[in-house]
Image (tube, rainbow, N blue to C red; front, side):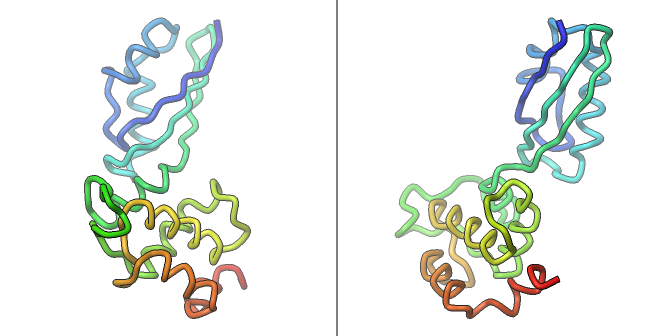
Length: 162
């Protein structure tokens, strides 16, 4: 009966209710122990939705693997807003600095297709464009072009050069 459960939980705030409880209920694991372990491991994400995988065995033992939150969640958390724009090319909901974009890219880099910080930042900026988030007051598509032109290499290339 060993198996795997994958859920999204708010960092540091998992509880035995849905979505976790109903998934864990039929398993041989101690639900409260799993919830506590998840909260301990996701505490740094403080309320941001975090993907969690729980692998359990027939004897009740379990292992927890905490993933990186979705890019959109990291952007919302960093820019402090609840939902993206309904018209992201016209109505903007937040603005990020290039340093904030770099920070999100660094957090998300293991899950991105990019090989370096510059391209990881461009992937984050693509998500910003679809959410109505500007970068340093500029439309995200304009910012991406500036990154392509090398305008932000001094900020975005230092990690790639290391």
